Image (cartoon, rainbow, N blue to C red; front, side, top):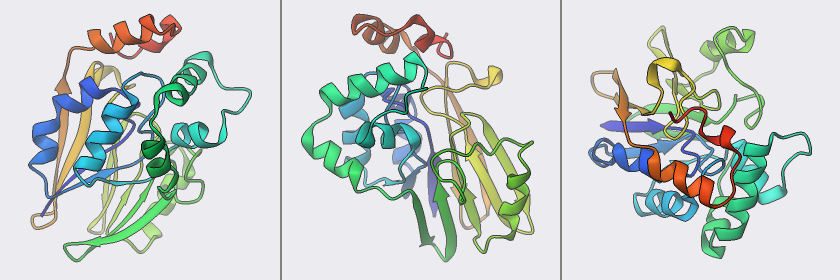
Length: 223
């Protein structure tokens, strides 16, 4: 069985579309939160994920849309949430509201734990390699622990356990994958994981943001 693992799309349908062949060749698509935020293709992203029966968890930007932004967030974050609130369809808002913050499941006899930030703080904790909490993941009783939020790839295999952050589809913050849609494909038979780093043209994403009044900082990681 092949499982596509993605995260942090951030309403960037151009980036998501660039990896559609990889996603649609997989048996299952897992999404680790932040479907919306920053950019402007809100319903396009959510519709795609629903149409492909993606297994999703809630990210912090998704949560902000449903419950309002904290007062201290940066302007590009606030722009993405405010814009999403003006365009999201009632059906897509309801669908988003039903997403869990943590999801556990069995796929091909392998156990998965899915979250956006961390299992202990699923919306807010950043599991960078220097966060001591990342070392605690290996003690959880799952074959695969998948998380996002940092917009950077991470992979560790510990005693046949996979700890994976696939990086960001819509806003990679790793200089090596700038302007790339990042994802991962896990083969549950061979236990091999393949990273996808697909270049795409961000011009439409940028032009939509500028048209709707986004701060120029919104494009920092796209060009």
